[in-house]
Length: 314
Ligand code: DGY
Image 1 (tube, protein in one colour):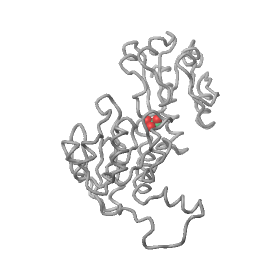
Image 2 (cartoon, protein in one colour; image 1 turned 90 degrees about the vertical axis):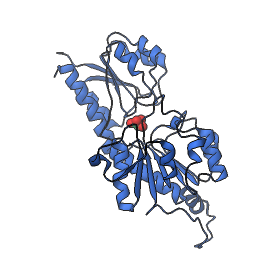
Image 3 (cartoon, protein in one colour; image 1 turned 60 degrees about the vertical axis):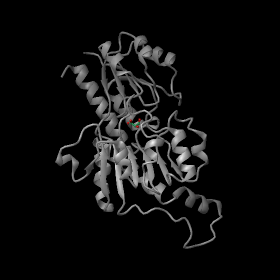
Image 4 (cartoon, helix red, strand yellow; image 1 turned 120 degrees about the vertical axis):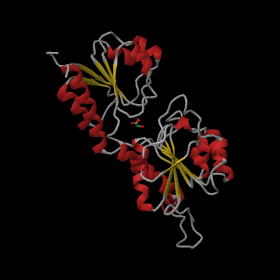
């Protein structure tokens, strides 16, 4: 290509990330501050060589059919690809780039934030300090769960799962995992494999969900699994909300089957199940797992390099 590829960025990135696209491509972007409707996205894609989406932008099979013929590449600024129909894109011969690898460490940091925040009752503590209702130190106050020395169960031992496991060594935790396939000894790094999720749950004082979302993982963490957890267990989710059955987790949190949850992701974001907002034992964050500037830049750089090599034919 002699002229710069035309790229439409469907969201408003931080300026430094936007500049990566603007400096390399003939780039325009969505500055409305909201997620575009499918009609708007299709209209903006007209005449573009590539479009860049994020997790809230849904591109189902019907939307893929409507993409203009000029679009040769769809980028998603995410490691998860559950919001786009990969089969439909492949059938149309459209290349897809996503952002694996570069966000593993920031997401693993966030998983630990969830575990610690939920276990140590951070929301209730912050409320006491901010509301002025704190009565002073008390040995009965906000007694939480010990993270150090507990058993960590990781559902999905991909790169993010392994980055979470790496950090567990500093907390002297025994790491257990369940994955579609057992890892080799080097990647397993001493973690104990469970061929079933039920067995993993039985060994998890902390159950951390880090597997990709797909039709086969939807609703995987349900009543049956939650009931296998030991007493006082904590459930964390750094992946996608619909892997958990909300009604089942909420009931378990209310009845004490599960002591606390640390959730960075929710089904139907941002319209989350209203009961999550009420429960004192839910430490909820607004899907910020990869949200550090270093990671944001690395994600942008990765997509730009993919686009560069695609359009230069290298
Ligand atoms: C990801 O990269 O999948 C994050 O969850 C943001 O969408």
